Length: 179
Image (cartoon, rainbow, N blue to C red; front, side, top):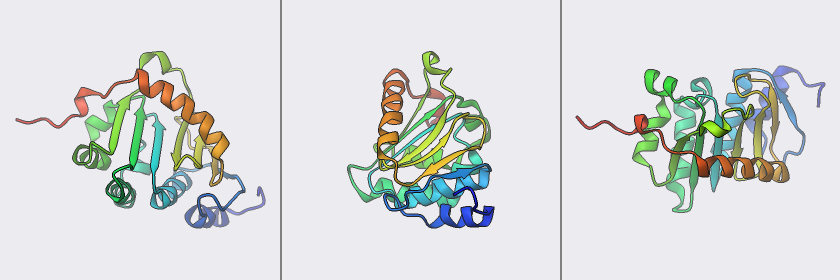
């Protein structure tokens, strides 16, 4: 689908259905990443997995995304949102809208700082319901691919996610400070 205009791509990123839209979409901008993640988060019914450099505020720190994550977290006792972040300092220094929600819904939303052993993993990704994927080959850049029906690829990335998750720990600096 290389012949799509940015406007066509953005429309598909906003409207494509998880498990139904089979064409990969190339994304190049922060806005396209934001649209894809928001659409997938709104549709998710079980899980979200995020592997990010710094939990990109432009993508994940906005009312719409936080509302979608909150809806998922409270929709089922089996809902699970897991976030791996390489650098928590920007989140702590500048704040992040998702952090307060994570603190309130800590049984459903968990974040861990990537362990030193896996700091050289260069990709970033967002996976919804183990089927839909936003994949960035370089975690610090917005160029990537979006797939709304990629269960096999998601399974492979989730193996990596799980391996890193088990070796990583929550950053104590992200806990609420009671003064």
